[in-house]
Amino acid sequence: MYYDPVCKNTLSEEKVNATYSYNGITYEFCCQGCREQFQGDPEKYIGKNWWQRFLYRMAESNAEEFKGQKPSCH
Ligand SMILES: [Zn+2]
Image 1 (cartoon, rainbow, N blue to C red):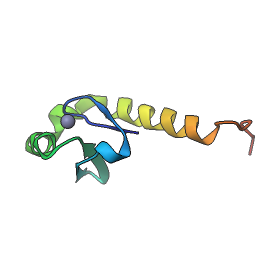
Image 2 (image 1 turned 90 degrees about the horizontal axis):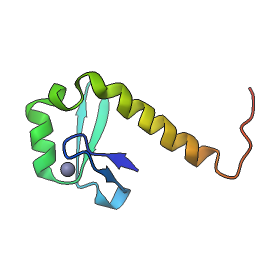
Image 3 (image 1 turned 120 degrees about the vertical axis):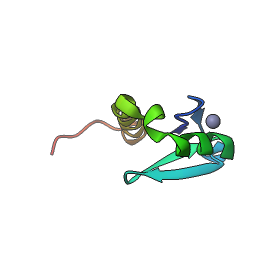
Image 4 (image 1 turned 180 degrees about the vertical axis):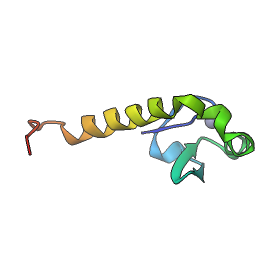
């Protein structure tokens, strides 16, 4: 699952039609239009909320990783 920072939709993999790398992070978009808007002013869309996206991705990957598994200590 991906997150389009422009239209604020969550996207499944097949709905990602454009990507853009900014500060070493790849952002996914539903369409070229969203990508272009983001490209024009990335800070407007990520700004102070980059951590929300990070947390969102963490939550997503944890949910996948721990599905049907017990969390284990290292
Ligand atoms: Zn979009």
